[in-house]
Image 1: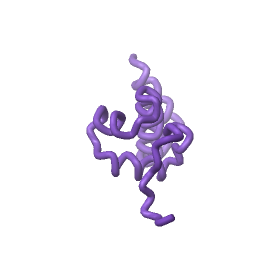
Image 2 (image 1 turned 90 degrees about the vertical axis):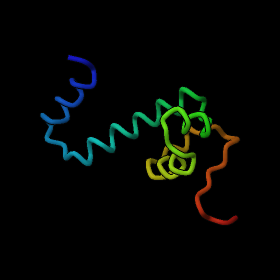
Image 3 (image 1 turned 30 degrees about the horizontal axis):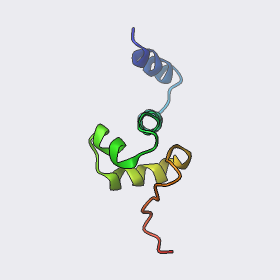
Image 4 (image 1 turned 120 degrees about the horizontal axis):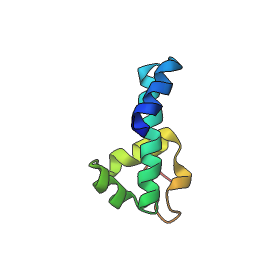
Amino acid sequence: MGDIEKLVAQMAQNRLPLAEVRTQVERCFLRRALAAFGGNLIHTARSIGISRGSLERKIVGYHLFAEVQAGTPLQTGKTQ
């Protein structure tokens, strides 16, 4: 059994709701993708097949600010 199947089996055994499983998997996936590209949003977004804006919204939603390099401001919709 692969690593993903083991993780899913453990989550199912713990009776986690599907929404929680999706959230945990997506958050972990995004953290690793951001780390692979040194926090570069454009390269990360391209590599996983989503727009930079979608990636930014996910970073904000999952509180992944530490994974983003310091020089890359997020477009949060707030004016400064």
